[in-house]
Length: 259
Image 1 (cartoon, rainbow, N blue to C red):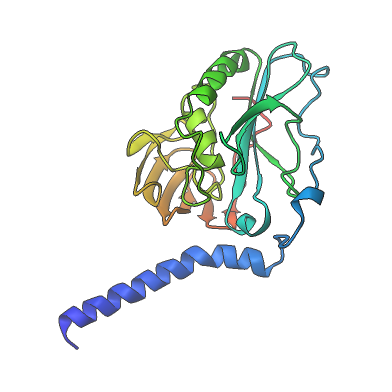
Image 2: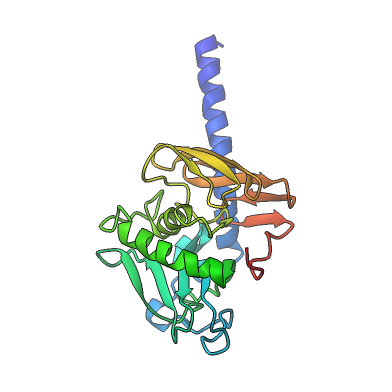
């Protein structure tokens, strides 16, 4: 076989192997019926998961970051994330998120902080309270108002809801978030090709609008972004990070404890 042809075949096979590896996780999620395909969003569960204390029971300032599987087929690939804030002495929470069906996409309004995301129960992935939250809330408010892509939304590779939350997190020193590897769009950088990792424990580079990149950080471990999906390994708390599936191994740090 001619060397050029042999090289082309090797490249094609390598690309097919990588593509199969990236899509195996989402395919498994669909095949295992963990994703409710064809559900009606208007009838989907939006009740509280009981993860947020009532304002009366927790008068201190509080910031929480949540993730829940995206609706319908999107859930096979990733999660939707949002930020909830409650000022000291406030009687309600305010929820900050990006919604793909509205323009501008940014929504910042009083709401139940720990609602199910259209049938998917949320997970608390980060939390700060007390004086740290008091410092964080004004910075979050300013970052939400300054989000540079309020008229633009793309499910893949971004900018989307996870792009927004990661963008806000990077601008608030009190927030240190180890996002799930299924938070597609978290690595879509809006103002350059490198940035501080969302956990503040390392750095990342991102090329091609979030299609390709690398994150190296203590909390995240090593994450490779390929075609907007994440493959990685957590060294501090040993686990593999796979597209669609998420973590396989030790759980991430307990978000119930304040930073």
